Image 1 (cartoon, rainbow, N blue to C red):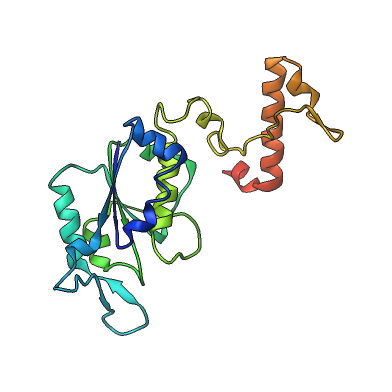
Image 2 (tube, rainbow, N blue to C red):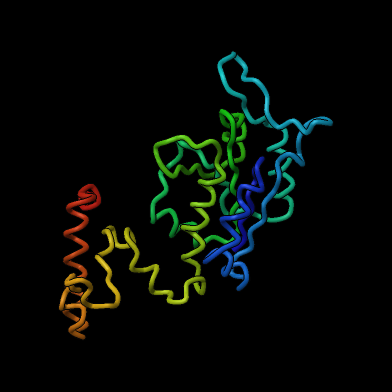
Length: 225
C-alpha cells in the first residue's frame, strides 16, 4: 500500500510515522508513506496557500490553485483508489471504513487547515470525506494520522499476530472483552478462573458473553445497529 498525504504542516506528521507499528510497517515495506508540503505549490514568491473568504466572515480558506496543482501532479504519477479529505463534516470513521480502506493500494489524503478548503476542491477532486469525531481540530494532520494508524495495522504482516486485529473492538460489532496477564493474583485481585482453566471452548464462550455485556453497558447503540 502507498499513502500520500498533502499538508501545510509536514513536520507535524513526522512523529506518528516514526515509531511503533507504523514504523515497522514501513521498514517491512508493507506500506509507503509520502508527505507532500503544500507550500511547495504555493502562489507567488511567498508561496501563499490561503486567502480571505468571498462574502466576508472570519477565518482564512485554503486556496484552490495550490491544492489542485498538487493533486494533479500526484494523479499524473499514479491512480488513487480514494482521494480523502479529512473534514469534521465527513462520514465518521469506524472500523468498517478502516477495513475497506485497508484493501486499497493507493490512498491520497488531504489535510485541511484554517477555515477549510475551497469547496471546488471537494466538488471536483475529493472522492471521500472522513471525520474522526464531532469536534474541530486545528488541522487535518492528526486526524490523518489516526486514519492511517487504523488502516495500516490491518495490513497482512504488520502485526506480529495477524489474528490480533480480528479480535479488536468493533470488528464484530461488539466491544472487546476484558483482558488479563500475569500474575494471576495481585493483592488479592484475581483473574477469572475460566481464563486459567485451559478450556478453550469455555473461554471463547466467556469472552463472547463479556463482549455482549460490556457493549450493552457502554455502547448499547452498537447492538441496535
